[in-house]
Each structure stands twice: as C-alpha cells, then as structure tokens.
Length: 600
Ligand code: M6R
Picture 1 (spheres, rainbow, N blue to C red):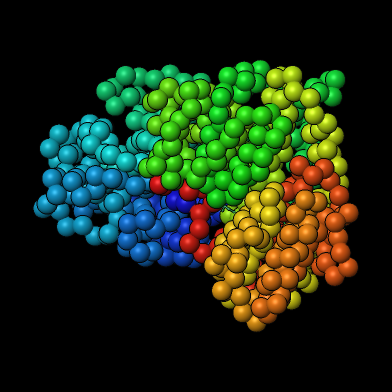
Picture 2: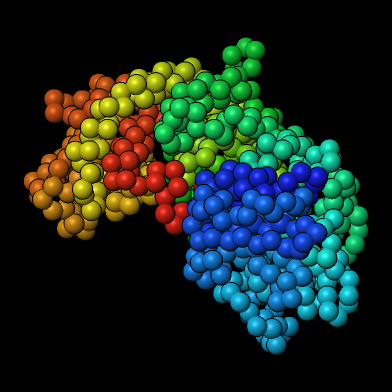
C-alpha cells in the first residue's frame, strides 16, 4: 500500500528517497514521486508506474539535502501522474506526501476550499490546500499545520515541506504507520523501517494525533495541544541483508525456501533450556483467563487462524471463533463473558484488524497480537505480542508468515493445555523439527511442482481446490495464493459442499486439486474427486504418506496429523508460484495488491 520516505540532512537526498521507495515497492503501488528542496526552490518529479521510470525522470543535476517521496496505491482517483504524490498547494509553497484515507474530505473541501481550484482527485490534496488557506490567515506555518491536522478525520501519515524553509519537515500521523529514523547529522521518516535501513536502525515511534517537527539535528514531538513528548528510540531488529533477493529470481521463491529455517528458528525461540516450551507467562495467564478466543485476521492470516482454531479447541479445549477483521467491526457477535482477542497479522499494520483492536480495547477486552513485526501498530497497541521470527516477508503473497503463524499457534495451544493440566501426546517442538525436514524435502523437488503447474494451470481460466476437515483450511489458502499472483479465478471448497452448487462450474479439463492428509476423510474426499472427474475435471490428488493411492500426483512426507497444513501448503505455494511464472505475471508484485493493507 502507499509508502512514505523523507530525508533531511547534509547529503544529496535524491538517492535516499529513490532507494527508500524501491525498498517499499513490495508493498504495492501504481504511481510514485519525490519532491526535493534547495536554494533554487522545489523540484517535483512524478510518474504513473514504477520507480525505475521515476529514476529516469529525476533530474540528476538537482542537488538538495531535504525531500519527501511517495509510492501511491490508488484510493481516491485513478492511478495517474496528476493523482500521484507529492501534491502541492496552489501557490507551490507547501508540498505533501500522505498515506491513509481522509474521511471528512468533502466536508473540508466544502467548508474551507470552496474558492480553491483543486488539481487532482485525491483526498490528499485537500490537506495541503487547507494548510495554505490557514497559513494565509495566521502566517505561521507550524500553527497552520497543527490546525489542519486537528481538522482531519480518518487515517493519515503525513510529511509536509515548506518551500520557504529548507530546515524542517512537518510530520503527523493517525492510524497509518509512520516512523522517525534517527541519524547523527540527519533524520528520516518512513512508513516502514525497511525504506531507511541503509541510513539507520534507530527509530522513534509516533503515536496517533502527534505532530513532529523534523530538523537535521533534532526531532520535536508534540501532541496536538502543544504538549512536548520525550520518547526513547528503539533499534529495528531487521538485518538489511534479509531484504535482498540474493540469487533468487523472486522473493516469493526465497521465502518459500526459508520455511524450514523459520520452523527451526521458532523452535529455538520458543524452547527453554529443558527443551520445554518457553512462553511469556502473561500470555499464558491471558489464555487461561479466557472462556472463548476470538481470532481476528485478514487474507492468509485469517486462513492461519482457521488452522489455529483446530489447535486451540482440540488441544487446549477452549472454544474459538475466527473472524474476518473487516466484517467483525460491522457485525460483532455476542461476546462471551471473558473473551481474549488474538490478532494474527504478518505486518501488524492491517487497518481492518486495527479497527477491531481499537473497538475491543474501548470495551476493555484483552488482546494478543501474533505478528512478524513486533514494533508494529497491532503489536504496540495489544496487551501481549508473540513474535513469528520469520524474517522480513517481502513478496506480496504471504508464505513463510502463514507457516510461522500456524507453528506459533500450535505452541500457544500446547502451552495453554499444559498449564491447564490437560493430557495429550503431542510435543510441538519435536514435531516442528520433523515438519522442517519434510518442508526441505518438498522444496528440493520444485521441478515436480513446476511440471504440475505447467500441466494444470498454464492456460486455464479457473481452478478449484478441494479438501475436507483440516485440508479444507489449506485449500482456501491454496486458492488465494493461486488467484492473487496468477490471476486464475480459483476457489477453495469443502469437498462435500461442491455438489450443493459449485459442481455446476466443472467443465471439460477444469483443474481440480484435492488434498488428502487426514485418515478420516481419505475415502470421502476421493469420492468427491470421482464426482468432478466424471464431469470432465482434470484432477490432481496430493496425499500424505500412508494415505496414498496409485494414481496420486504427489505424496507428501508424513508429519503429525495436527501439523499437516504446514507441509501440505508448500506444494500449493509452489504451484501458485510456477503458475504465475509461466503466465508471465509479476510474482512478487501482483497487480492491484499491496503487501500491507493500511486502509480499511
Ligand atoms: O499483514 P497481514 O497478515 O495482516 O495481512 C493480511 C492480508 O492482507 C494478507 O495475508 C494477504 O491476504 C496476502 N497478500 C495473502 O498472500
């Protein structure tokens, strides 16, 4: 989704901004721009399309030591150069980059900007025009900025520069992520620390409704009513080399291959010196206090939540509801007496989940966030955090975060069960080690999945994935993976549900992939495969060792029955990857999608 980077220092800012925007490309965008300020004035460069095109457009001879840059994922107005950020006020004095959505856009326009000619269709432009209108009244830039921010409703991360003052960047935030990066003789802003890791690993959080004045040697944080805030910086735990592709053609393939390592890292992080589970005792208490768990998530994280429900109910004996974040806020179920909310989010920044978190906090309920980014908004605002330790996930299609989420949920369920004194025969740390080896054997056989992908998905318009019980959860994820990167219309169905409607879509050679990893559904799901095959479907069965039959397309190495999703999803990820590759799709940056969905 939209990205922001800004720099004020003593070096040339162009490369910092362009490099920072390149690091944000993975989040998804459709236009980009930078503005730099020097003694000759403001220099604005914008393009519809990729950063590479922006690089070609930026004048190499312009040298400036401060500026702001942006990648835009269109919300108000089509992707175009006019709608790309930075936007300027009509006199050209103020220039802005903005992430988020201004909800009172029309009210501000009608009340304050009736006499202002707007140049774009964006909600962002009204912010910068309002700063100018208010500045013309009070003749104080900081005050005009403060008054403007106070009038905004909705989500925003904002960086503003004033053409008449090259020594300050004005910054504000509400709901949308934004960090201040600290240097020795410079400071930066970034919507994601990855954009500025080359410059610094020391960051300051900005809380909602704070404004920040960023200078070369100083950072002043204030609340909207002028109270000065002192805050300690933190060190971002990301290694700059983790965000390089190395020899891989795409991040997605690298991240699929990293999954065995991630499993081992999770074992290491969640194991104590006696080889038992090591987990924050506050998290354990919160689980024990809960009479019902509400898992809130979106997309792939929602699919991981569905698997987590099985663990927590079967192992820890606590009822679980899994909700799509964007639906929960508008259709809240009756809550139990003592609920615990578990937010699952790779990025920790998903606006839909955050909106639920804000609501349930208002109701006084406890929240645990399971995330790959411990300093993220969902992590900071929840009571407890469990870290996924998956390393940065750059490809838009989530892979290693999904398996890490499932692994951590399994550990959480077992830890709770042990604390409750429940008896069961399942050591998650030992079983995850077996999973890691099984994953390795799958990633070593990529050519087999490449060949299945070519055979089944090279030219098809649609595809179906079917499964029952635990496999049903995984086929939903398989379908999401395939559709988001290959643009094949794909659906994941419960095998038994097909004949209640969807089987009408089966035509000659429609691909249907079935997963068979659970003994109790082996017979019934194979029956569903026969039903679609009889109607012309081109079927592919991926089964687990011990359950295989002669014509199965691939047999997965055996792992504990509860953890089969961790293994069965790997072929699904690889099928999606190779399908996208053979259809010439941009695997890491699929069209219309953003890595981190920071607007509701
Ligand atoms: O960062 P989150 O886990 O909260 O993101 C949730 C979804 O936006 C995300 O999983 C999305 O569905 C992925 N692109 C799927 O691959």
